[in-house]
Each structure stands twice: as structure tokens, then as C-alpha cells.
Length: 436
Ligand SMILES: *Cc1c(COP(=O)(O)O)cnc(C)c1O
Image 1: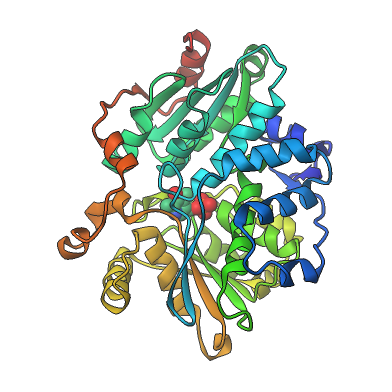
Image 2: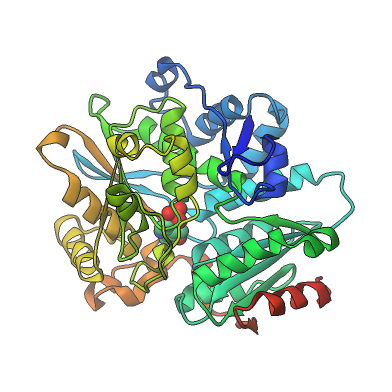
């Protein structure tokens, strides 16, 4: 696999180099220089095949021999220890449940694959690798769990103080061991900027082996394309064209879906459903990419004012908004609409959506029209509702089963280090802390 930078100034990298670097030398994001589609018969024959097999075939195709088959199979077997089932609510409406991993959110897919890929890359190294992650909630816990107790790795998480749920915070701050949680007095965008500054800092880069685990790392992005193919393989009525509604923030999940489509997956349309943070619909409507401050909403893992993966999306479509608009529709929904969607889905189908999935549902409702009749709309349900109980009405809340692995985190004791959003203090901390 050959990857180039979205800024076009860095030399092309192999998949393994891009994983180890995280971000390209010119500050851009790595993106596949080209994606060859798999033959249509691969998708025609996908029906009923298990996710792990499909993931292996797709990864093998995309990586083009860079990781030997046996090792790739091991990486996939170790990462995909959980499934991504579709719950059909109606003939034309399915929910792809992406919350069956260790931290109950879809970020487990990317985090697990990345951890096992890095462990494989690092198999002969003697120096410790430091994984830096800015998190708006779910990324951090997924990455922390994926790397927890992995030899030779230390995870440093940055999260915006007071802007994530209590449950999310406990999932981040109760692991200990090789995981350090930094509580930043700022927003997610501050956390993301601090991580980017760390990677751009020559002194830090020579003194520590820094690796990114944000959705900017290609190893986080790639495995998120697997479950789109998995969803396709599970659809009960194979004559219906498929539309995916993706609740979106930093646009990693959406970009992975686009990669799956470029790899040949027949998708009629993507719907990128966003909350009050409207960078993507604004870009599609006006072409502007000027960052704006993040706005706090109910679907807080999508509170991103300046989504990193917009650069990848633009690159993949040659910065042609009309071309992007031909496969993608994006719309924004308020917290009020999100709450109403949770109630309505519960009433109609006795199914509980979390606020992120509910934004996805709004997207499907809003965008589907006569033109999409006959299609199967699939909502990506990105988190388990038990992670966001506060957002639910009491009646709905009482019907949610809280999984045991979540209850365990809730009983732990929070431990974090508080820092200001200034880069200098963060750098100081990195250089002068001895990590276990
Ligand atoms: C991160 C996250 C999102 C947004 O995904 P992006 O890839 O950043 O667009 C949506 N829902 C949940 C629960 C998340 O954790």
C-alpha cells in the first residue's frame, strides 16, 4: 500500500511506515495514493461470511502483501474478538451495532487493530513507544484498553476537562499501569492541537518515540472499513441498494466507509449526520474549511469544530465538492431532534439508541426521500446507550441493560493529571516524567 500526504509535500510511505509515523512529515495526513476495487464477485459472494474473514480479505487486498498473511491473520484475529451485528428494525431500516467491543464504542475496532499492528511492528524493538491520543471521549478509552499491559508501550491520553461524561472519564482514568490520563482545561480541539504540536516538535521527536493513535493514524482508519463490508454481507434482502448513515465528528468513520466504497463496496449513498458542529455540511455547501470552535452537545464524541479527516475526504475526491456531494449528503441536527429521535425509535421499535446513533437516525429520516425508496438504510450505532444514560428519559433509561465491563469501570477510582492547554507545559511534562 502506498500512502501519500494530503499536503503533498512529504515522500510516499508504506503502510508500516505510515503507521509508525502517524502524521506525515509535512504535517498532512496519510491517505492511500490509489485504491484498486475488488471484483464485484467478491461482494456478490460476501453474503453470510463472517466479519473476520471479510476483514482479512479486504486488509490483504489493501495492504498488498506488506504484512505476511499469517501475521495479518493473527492481527485480525486478536483485534476482532467481537462482532458487528445488524439489528433490523424494519425491512428498510437496520442498525449496525458497533458497540460490542471492550469499551462499548466503535472506536474499539480501530484501536484494537492499531495496537496489534504496532505490537507486530515493534516486535524486535527495545525502546518504549509512547502513544499520544487526544480524545473527545471514546477514542481514549478504546486506545487505552487496546494497549493496556501491552509490553513496550505507554499510552498518554489528553481529554477536555468537564466535557466528557462521567462514564467516559472513568473508563479513561481507572486503568493505571501503562496508561496516563491528562485532564486538559480546554476543548477537544485544544487536546488535538497539543498532540499535533508534540509531533511537530523536533526535540520531543528525537527524545521520545512518539506515535499517534488518533483517527489520523492510518491503522485506526483502515479497520473501520471492515464493518461496512460486514454490514453488506448481513443484509437480509440482497436486492436492496444500501445507504449508510454515519454519525460524524472527526470524520474517520465516514472516510473509512468511503475507502470501502473505493475498494468496490456497492453503496448508493452515505449520509454524514452531524450535531451542531457543522464543518462538513458547511464545506459541502460553501467550500470553506475555516475552523470554528467546537460546540458542546448531547452527542459529545462528535463535538469537533475542525475535523482532521476532512483533509482526507477532500484529497480522495480531488477537492471536487460536486463529486463528493454525489456520494455523500450531510445534515446537522439539534439536541432536541436527537432526544426526539431516541423517543420515537423506542416507541416504534422498542429499541434504545444512544445520542450518537440517534443523530444517525435523524440523518436517515431527513435525507431519505422518494429517491431512496427501495433501499436499505443502515444506521451506524457507534456507542452502547448505557454509556449515555443521562441523555435518556427515565422510562427508556430503565430498560437499558448495563454491561458488566462498564459496571467494573464505574467502580474504579479516577486518577488524572491536570494541565493547561498551553503546549509548553505539556512538553515539559512529557520530557520530565518517568513513564512506567
Ligand atoms: C468518535 C465517535 C463518533 C464520531 O466518529 P468520527 O469518526 O470522529 O466521525 C461518533 N460516535 C461515537 C460514539 C464516537 O465515539
